[in-house]
Image 1 (cartoon, rainbow over the protein chains, first blue to last red):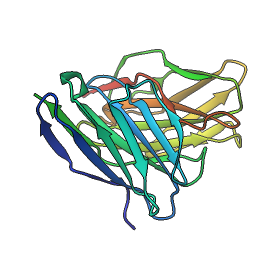
Image 2 (cartoon, chains in turn orange, green):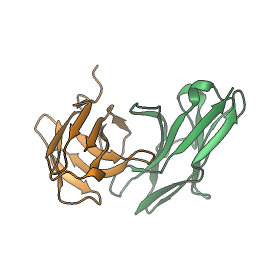
Image 3 (tube, rainbow over the protein chains, first blue to last red):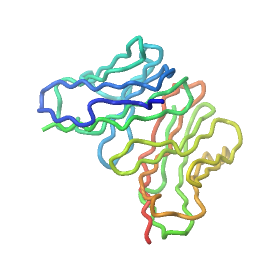
Image 4 (cartoon, rainbow over the protein chains, first blue to last red):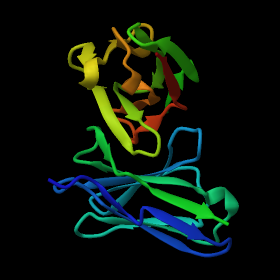
Length: 112
Length: 114
């Protein structure tokens, strides 16, 4: 039984570039959330999708966008990368709203 | 609106002694509460959850937490610390009737001395 899978695991980008991160939730889970975790801090909420619709958005600039596909997988896109975007990006898979979230191992993004 | 406050950024204990990690929450609705653990360079693992059933919740690896509505607290405890418990711990709130978006505390780093 596969857990939450995220790709890639590590990524190095240059300032100003664009990045796409991918997440496949647990089979049967309809909701995906994205979090940014800067070193030494707790995860900060970016987006939540449920049944392919955006249900929530955190306090992040418009450079951040996401979508959920018919198979419930999801992409997080970040444009015009800044050094401050360097972080661990976590994807959470949730079966139904208000049940526990299961997390992937994350994508470590380094912007140089 | 919902929020979580983890009262200690670091907790240091000796192996074999009790662990107490403190968490207070704020929620406009009936909350669901969770504790997650994160080992270095790893993802987040669910330790336990409270979803309006029994107020004393037992989790994995000997951890438990008690939901106290009057104190708006959900402290995590373990009777005897093990070296492998050294990690970052996060308290999380999600609200029934609210946004259902899990909100994390800043984390508590548990240090276990031999």
